[in-house]
Length: 89
Image (cartoon, rainbow, N blue to C red; front, side):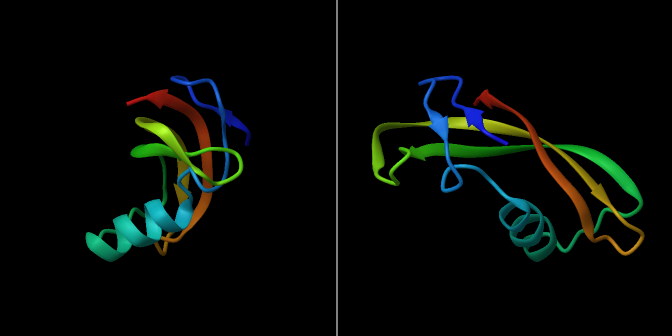
Protein backbone atom coordinates (compact mmCIF):
# COMPACT_ATOMS: atom_id res chain seq x y z
CA UNK A 1 0.00 0.00 0.00
CA UNK A 2 1.30 3.44 -0.92
CA UNK A 3 0.60 5.92 1.85
CA UNK A 4 0.92 9.67 1.88
CA UNK A 5 1.80 11.49 5.07
CA UNK A 6 -1.22 13.53 6.21
CA UNK A 7 1.06 16.21 7.69
CA UNK A 8 3.72 16.91 5.03
CA UNK A 9 1.97 15.13 2.12
CA UNK A 10 5.13 13.25 1.17
CA UNK A 11 5.05 9.58 0.20
CA UNK A 12 5.76 7.20 3.10
CA UNK A 13 8.18 4.45 2.12
CA UNK A 14 8.92 1.08 3.75
CA UNK A 15 11.53 2.57 6.10
CA UNK A 16 8.81 4.81 7.59
CA UNK A 17 5.86 2.46 7.84
CA UNK A 18 5.27 -0.13 10.54
CA UNK A 19 5.09 -3.80 9.55
CA UNK A 20 3.88 -7.09 11.02
CA UNK A 21 7.29 -7.75 12.62
CA UNK A 22 7.53 -4.40 14.39
CA UNK A 23 3.91 -4.35 15.58
CA UNK A 24 2.95 -7.97 16.24
CA UNK A 25 6.21 -9.89 16.71
CA UNK A 26 8.37 -7.28 18.45
CA UNK A 27 5.73 -5.48 20.51
CA UNK A 28 2.65 -7.60 21.05
CA UNK A 29 4.26 -11.03 21.26
CA UNK A 30 7.76 -10.35 22.55
CA UNK A 31 7.24 -7.53 25.04
CA UNK A 32 3.76 -8.33 26.28
CA UNK A 33 3.53 -12.10 25.90
CA UNK A 34 -0.04 -11.69 24.67
CA UNK A 35 -1.70 -13.68 21.89
CA UNK A 36 -4.93 -12.71 20.13
CA UNK A 37 -6.68 -15.84 18.86
CA UNK A 38 -9.48 -16.43 16.35
CA UNK A 39 -10.07 -12.72 15.88
CA UNK A 40 -10.00 -9.90 13.41
CA UNK A 41 -8.97 -6.63 15.10
CA UNK A 42 -8.19 -3.02 14.35
CA UNK A 43 -4.86 -1.88 15.77
CA UNK A 44 -3.68 1.71 16.12
CA UNK A 45 0.10 1.98 16.11
CA UNK A 46 2.03 5.18 16.89
CA UNK A 47 5.14 5.81 14.78
CA UNK A 48 7.22 8.67 13.38
CA UNK A 49 7.68 9.90 9.83
CA UNK A 50 11.47 10.26 9.91
CA UNK A 51 12.83 9.52 6.43
CA UNK A 52 12.34 10.89 2.93
CA UNK A 53 11.96 8.71 -0.17
CA UNK A 54 15.75 8.35 -0.51
CA UNK A 55 16.12 7.22 3.12
CA UNK A 56 17.58 10.45 4.50
CA UNK A 57 16.33 11.87 7.80
CA UNK A 58 13.80 14.65 7.25
CA UNK A 59 14.24 18.04 8.88
CA UNK A 60 11.12 17.91 11.06
CA UNK A 61 10.04 14.37 11.96
CA UNK A 62 6.42 14.09 13.06
CA UNK A 63 4.20 11.57 14.83
CA UNK A 64 1.66 9.49 12.94
CA UNK A 65 -0.79 6.68 13.67
CA UNK A 66 -1.24 3.64 11.44
CA UNK A 67 -4.71 2.12 11.46
CA UNK A 68 -4.16 -1.59 10.84
CA UNK A 69 -6.58 -4.42 10.12
CA UNK A 70 -5.14 -7.66 11.44
CA UNK A 71 -6.47 -11.21 11.76
CA UNK A 72 -5.19 -13.98 14.01
CA UNK A 73 -5.70 -17.74 13.74
CA UNK A 74 -6.46 -20.24 16.50
CA UNK A 75 -2.78 -20.44 17.44
CA UNK A 76 -2.39 -16.66 17.78
CA UNK A 77 -0.42 -16.26 14.55
CA UNK A 78 -1.05 -13.11 12.56
CA UNK A 79 -2.47 -14.22 9.22
CA UNK A 80 -3.50 -10.79 7.86
CA UNK A 81 -1.86 -7.39 8.34
CA UNK A 82 -3.07 -4.43 6.28
CA UNK A 83 -2.42 -0.76 6.91
CA UNK A 84 -5.79 0.82 6.10
CA UNK A 85 -5.01 4.44 6.92
CA UNK A 86 -2.30 6.74 8.22
CA UNK A 87 -3.46 9.63 10.43
CA UNK A 88 -1.70 12.50 12.17
CA UNK A 89 -0.66 11.48 15.66
